[in-house]
Image (tube, rainbow, N blue to C red; front, side, top):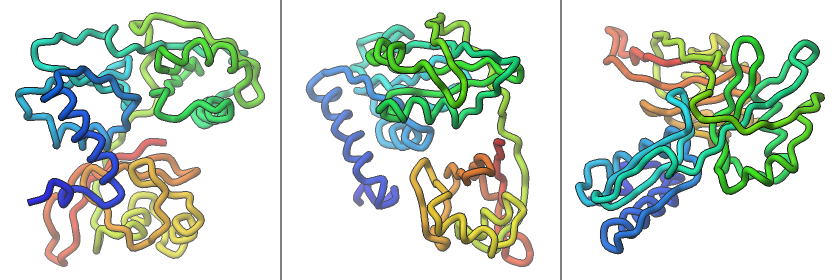
Length: 258
């Protein structure tokens, strides 16, 4: 039985990477620190090598609220502490009385100066507008030199201890619905309370991502654990399927973030 049959075809390159990491640690006794992994990638790592007694794995995104985390893989005789993840927490200082920064503003500023998404972790914004971002230590100096503007705001980035991370304002709110199938267009219509005819253009225009990758097929089949985002509508995730109703519909649990 091939390990690849447990994953989608588009996930195969990452699965191969995980298997390489496993071999490096298990047989060559290396230790490996990865870039930031999204929750789906973390799940794949756990499913492949989470029970391997010859490989220890630890995750950290600099905060207990973090979704995106770096992974450290080591032989079991090595210990891992927070400093081993090489994380830096920046406070984004800006005139909060006059400007409101959103997650997408900070994300865009980093991408616009050529920083790859896997080099920085979560962006935290509190209810009162305090903004923070976790990045890989190896790019901290570059970030300080190149990020002076976010959106329309002039900003200053200050390094602060990881212990000073804030609690983000957006949390998952769990809801329940029923759906005739696990097709992407069907589930999106249920999650966002829209008709399928209104959902389809979002998919066709490339405005929908599943597990952080653009999906432009309405008939794409979702699975438990999938993360979905629709531009302008926030994010959702498929939490579970609690059987079928008498009318043979899926009883679906999902989470929503704005």
